[in-house]
Image (cartoon, rainbow, N blue to C red; front, top):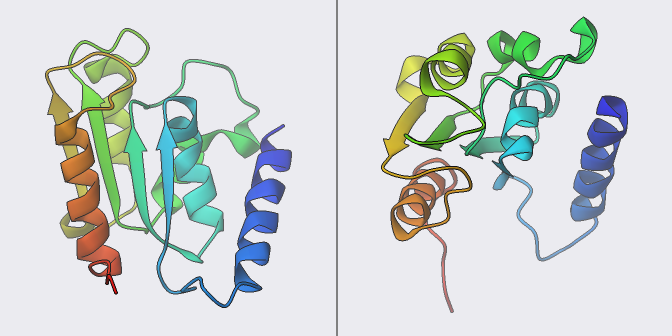
Length: 146
């Protein structure tokens, strides 16, 4: 399944390359919950992605084969990453899941940020949105409107 996910991401990015209306230099990864857990592996293998947003995810408690375990890819991830998590997340405890993943990321310290909000799992609130948009503006540039 992990290989299928990576192939699907590659196919999506290949498709976006055919689009004249997509700026290839401004693509980001957004993962929430399980998608955030998969993020370190996908960001490590896909240099097209210039920024990563990992919301409500951490080091996953499920057993992965060592060769596809996202945690093992974390040190190879260099992409700027914002992690936003809830202090009361039942799925990903702060000390046992979130902090270890954040510390394992190979992203330079100046290009990674961890924010803990007064929330549970599945954060979709104004603060998470604001933080995400600021991160994307910082690493991809502000969105230009017509």
